[in-house]
Length: 237
Image (cartoon, rainbow, N blue to C red):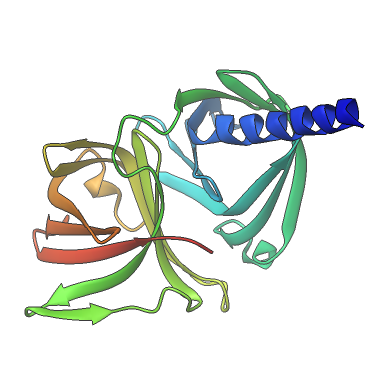
């Protein structure tokens, strides 16, 4: 009985290690049928993930999808919350096999091999967040994070992406992302793709950030030079 219990604990421990090992950022660069060099950037928090395709040279946005994920051994299960290529997939489940090593992941049955970018460090804001409020004219305007319309931001240790979408209508509103740093209370985004306006690719935006009662307070000027003050809450569900 003791041996069986130890074996089960070892197996469960292995699953936890495997799941944790995927947290962070991954990327793959390939050439499409038109000869375009395409980067696929993937960010995984403990429960949520996003994958995005964009031109590796120009930053032109191509597609994105994401939602929740879980790992059972080498079987990954995703529940789709947004998909710019096929909105009919929203709410459906995708299951596929992975070949996992320390610094790369291969999707079974394909030639897709992703290399690790980071393991969730060194940035201070790694995880999945939902916008839960804005301060306008000195007043806090709170936002219900349980509603279908969401603005989510997922960060690894070095990469970020925000996504605006609606799980009920399946409507996708926009996304942008790239790399980021957190140094001495300054949060800096370096934009590598922006679905609404390719001209913003290459821009660097610096904001103030502060954690207050477990919430991320984010303030400065947006990409249009307009002041903003946002509050983000850790996404629990």
